[in-house]
Amino acid sequence: MESRIKDTRKALGLIQLKVQKLLGIPTRTQQGWELGERSLAPWLEEMIIREYKRIAEENCKE
Image 1 (cartoon, rainbow, N blue to C red):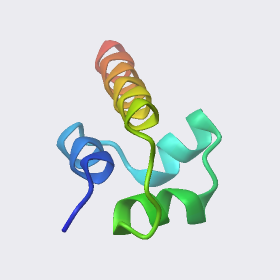
Image 2 (image 1 turned 135 degrees about the vertical axis):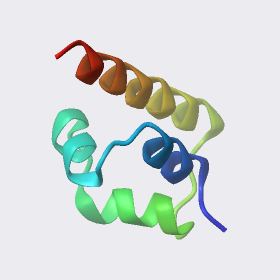
Image 3 (image 1 turned 45 degrees about the vertical axis):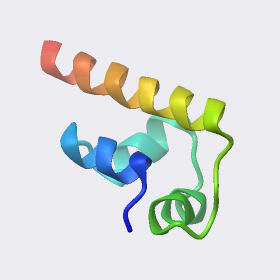
């Protein structure tokens, strides 16, 4: 089962490396979230999804 983090990232056309660099997320942490090995507090998951949407919106402006 894929995570909302992964589903959102893919739907927005973002690659892991880009969001990791922009948000300062360690690679293994990102992978853990997306594989369901690590869980996020609901408020943190929502915050990350909002940031993904912001990043995607900024990419559209470029």
